Amino acid sequence: MTYQEMTREQLKKELKSLKNEYAAKKALGLSLDMSRGKPSAEQLDLSMGMLDVLSSSDNLVTRSGIDVRNYGQLAGIPEARALFADLMGIEPDEVFICGNSSLNMMYDTVSRGMVFGFPGGEKPWGKQKRLKFLCPAPGYDRHFAICEVFGIQMIPVPMTPEGPDMTLVESWVNNDETVKGIWCVPQYSNPEGITYSDETVRRFAKLKPAAGDFRIFWDNAYCVHHLTSEPAHLLNLMEECRKEGSEDMVIMFVSTSKISFSGAGVAAIGCSRTNMKALERVIAMQVISFDKMNQLRHVRFFKDIEGVKAHMEKHRALLQPRFEGVTNRLEQELGGQGIAQWTHPKGGYFISVDTMPGCAKRVVSLCAGAGVKLTDAGATFPYGRDPQDRNIRIAPSYPTLDELLQATGIFCLCVRLAAVEKLIETVRE
View: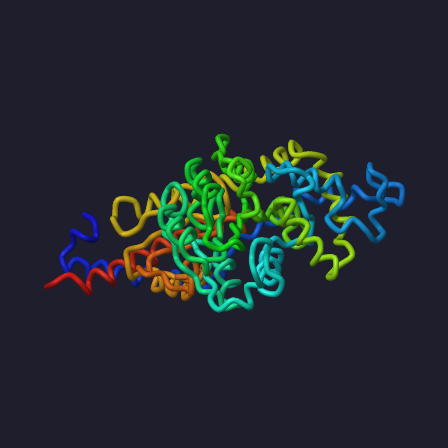
């Protein structure tokens, strides 16, 4: 019998049983964290050899004769630009290597748009009266936070199994000159793990923006973060844009934050040569060069794109059991109850769970009371407003497998408890 089939009296009896079970879990005094997609210590250990690849002054000159200890090479050493070009599927001269954080680059890019504007625009964003960004939802909370910081109005766009609702995207972008950008996590989206279809990518390339300074913020954070032996395929947006003459629309972002060291990786921007000239002109007044020693360290350690892929297979060996452990536990404890559904991602860092409408905030609160930390309910929507209060993002990477299974068990208990509470409100005597 599913919960929906129970009478009010049966639900009350179930609620009492669940509350007793919850009290027992709460008494354990646990402290478990499934809130953010942090790599585990085991994953970070995979890159420790990187610390030994630069050992003397003889090692600190690149193949092209650049001494990485000194000033120069604003856009990055050629070897690093070539490696990131392979990661993004673009040309090396379309790559700008920055510091360690792609989030930092996205924030700075919006900031530069506000102060200096973009090629194709008549004046900086900050001097225009109204600004809008399209925000596929559920999506990445940090993207939405950037818009909030700069006072940019966010327009939610529903996600489909193919990616954002492109009919809605086209309607906004092609007809409203105040729409200046759209956030995209095109491969293994955060949090649902969706990879944009070929048709979706082609429709992005064919956009005809009403605003000449409209930009697609293509945050390909999980481009090599596969969880299966058959990774999802993502069509190359820049190649499609070249066919349409629309490559100036695209700004790509990628980093090694979840490949090497989260706090000491390398991040890069990918963009057209027109955008690159504008970017270099502005950044040249901000910094002489970024950390070239770290760039060389990464190049020497990974060597090439095949080295990156081989390294990511080691990550997969650690992550796949965690993701399977969570989805198996969800199936065992919630399957067939009609009170939740969840994703089975082929890559990325998250599992997206949809509870019964009106239950997500209650589930997160109950979990917190039992010592399990989750991302705030609503965080995956602009302004933190989930219209149905049902989406919860689970991050399986950081806890140990035993901790993860324990936390997932408590999560399932809280989902059942919140569902029974909600059903009792609606079921008549």
